[in-house]
Length: 537
Image 1 (cartoon, rainbow, N blue to C red):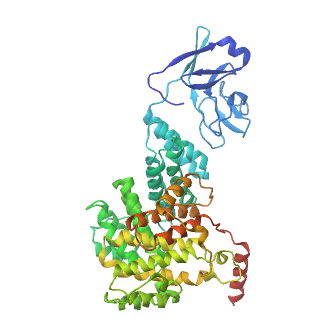
Image 2 (image 1 turned 45 degrees about the vertical axis):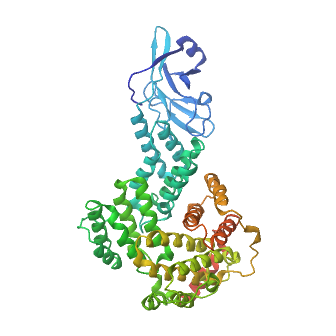
Image 3 (image 1 turned 90 degrees about the vertical axis):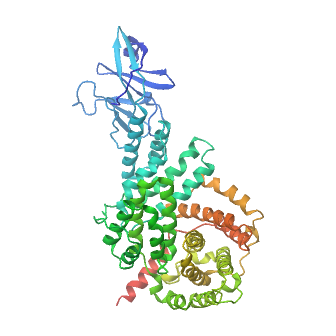
């Protein structure tokens, strides 16, 4: 039963009328209320089932086994068999609660208290129900609870804050795209969420649902206890040593001491200390900073703890044969290379050659950045999509569209983070060359790109981005990239509207959105598994 201040009793109808009919609809204050007379008692509830809005006046009343106290009736919505306790409103199948209204009988008339609970109570209830919806990843209930929170005068952003607090210890390996896509969804919400009430909550629903999907199916993985006075160098060393306990203690020391802002530089240094995790590490640094700026300082500690866990566990791909040329190339960087450079020089170079080519133009950072960005955009525009469907190749050739979008979102993070940490440009530019070198083998030079040409990139993005509010992608990892890629692209184009790669990048994004991504590879998985087992010996 909800607790109310200042009851608002309204006369509904004569008791005899309800007794004769057994059930009646009563409307007051914009509310449609179902009245039932059962087992000698009067019950009142919202007539709309909280599941999909079907009329509960058409439901079935029973005693739920006949062993309950007098008046303890159960109401079943006959559309989907949801069942509610008509005294408490509890949902007996695990979904939304039913709104119950207090009733009284006075002088032969039925009175209903239609007063709403205080706003703070309704907000608290919505958040509690939202957390409950995580249990079975009930997306539609998440949307309803966030809508209820907003209708009560709450800020939907609070749903995101709470979701971060509920989930951050359940990310076993640290930050995921659920966090990385969140600031981009919030940016889109600022730009396009004012269109209507539905649009205003979509970014928050998508963020919360993705956090739930990535985390609450798993157990908690608590962060090690402890707090250490912040020291930037020690944090970098702790991450390099894969010492989560030391890194977590230093994060707490920063958040509770000088402030979370001092974490940005060392985590970025740690992220670029290796070519690691296919660029995720640097992207996560940038997106964590953006998300804390949007959610507020109180979310810094859980978000940065999650980030350092990701950095501690990141795969260091410069240690594998494919990228072993990175470290010698970084050591050879002298910032004096004066060879003119163009994007097409990187289109087909493998990793060692791409790194060598970047070093020969190390003296002109802007020209090298443009060349690498132009090459990444060209490669994405010319991705040979047959690779995404093949099942006759070994695991290293499991390539799809998302491998190419990462070249762009990594470049976006490079400009954002290295623009504030100038000494990290060599690491970042050479790692961009690792991207182009790796993706070069999966392009098709003869790809017909004319259908994807964009005359006005800014107008193209302005038309594309609002459509994401009704995307049809069921897989969160894909929808996250559908948001991150165009937001990063818009940011880069606005930073360099006259850059030579702008039309190529816009066309690449256009092609991505006109293409399909094959995500389940039944035959490929089976063949690669058989080959693996055969080689086990």
